[in-house]
Image (cartoon, rainbow, N blue to C red; front, top):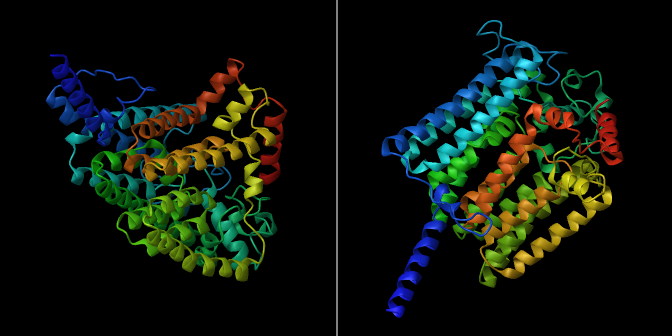
Amino acid sequence: MPEEKRRRRTTLLATDVTEADRSDGAVALRRGPLLPKIALPEAPASWQRIAPRIALATIFGCCAALVIFASSGPTVLVWHSQTAFPSWMAGPLGGLFGQLPHHVKTLWIGYSSALVVMLIAYGVALRYSRSLSMKLIWVFVFATLVILLLGPPLEGTDLFNYLGYDRLWALHGLNPYTHVIADEAHDPVWLPASWHHWRSPYGPLFTAITYPLGLMSLPVAYWVLKVVIVALGLVFVWLVYSCAKLTGRDPRWAVLLVAANPLFLVQEVGGFHNDFFMIVPSMAAILLLLKRRDRWSGAAIAVAIAVKYTAIVIFPFMLLAARPATRRWRVLSGFALAGVPLAVASLALFGTALPNVAGQSKMLTAFSIANLLGWVFGFGGGAPIFLTALEVCVVLVIVYLLLRNRDWLSGAGWATAALIASLGSLWPWYVVWLLPLAAIASSARLRAVALILTTFVVITSVPYTQKFLGSEGINPMAGPVGRAANALVQQYTR
């Protein structure tokens, strides 16, 4: 009898591991010491069918509402729109619904509520993702990205900063790595841009491939770049879907983890940020490696690094996965075949000047993990010495993960999570770097961390969080470190 009980227990444990390794989000989050197993009551079958559909409709509706209000006129939802908000910036929905409320407090309450509602709906969609068809998910992804395309950039001016650096180079013959947008203060892009006294922090490949935008009129360049970013967003979601199928993850859950995420939709797509220029070749490199097309995989990751240096954290894990040694050499040869010409082209176009990553590393956001840790540990926030220590920790984490020699996708995900945690300035769209790796890797804990990070960033990025915490005497930027960081931002944007 004891032997039979032992066999039964072993069978049950094996079944639990198998279920936890599936990519259904509800099951994956039940495993691990950090998240004890929770016995959730089963919802009625009718609710399981209806709930995720209502959730996706809610997310789409919130995005549509934000776009309609942002397009209706100058509002706090579109930075600098009070100064200038031409019809080409508002888009085809501008004024279509008449005069809408523009009161600052009303809009901030509405915006904060929309993000929280989207976060809840996101959790429901993930919980019951198995009740959704892949066709319905694709309809949701396409429709939501299109509605966001029709509106102006939400809560950010990076789109105009990109165009400012392009015009600085293409129209005015100035190197964006040695000059600033203020050097073209007479150009119309100066008004909607923000980083007037900050040299470009973006990779040379991104600057080179967007050079033609600098030769276009500002309205045309604005819409061309928006269309390209949204198209890359669709390609990115397709790459996640394809990788999930190859790694045995449920592609429905994997796609929803990325594409229904409120930070992906509102901040990354709705803000029209350039991260897709990096994460599309990064995900392509992973897909190509999974398909054993090693040289193309190495070339793709070289392209990603040339766009934004943060993609480099994935590269050592790709080399770990490329076995035997002949495959590793093929990855390295592909990396060299793409990387060397890219480096030569960068020298030819921009000389020895490098992107202003060092300047970016001095910036702080109040609720970055690094700033909060520095504040709690008595450094007054993200002090330079503390941020340097965190950078060293990231390197040590990567070395440790490589030495463990386990699942390379999970390792790349944990390295990316460590990188995000080490940054003094944590912008909401940075979470998108982690989401695809969490979606396709085998680690249930990594998926949990991605969801916890999403929740944390949504809550801390809603407009009233800082106001509420400030009223309670909690201000991570109140000390000398925070004041110095704020002064630096004022210097860049004046």
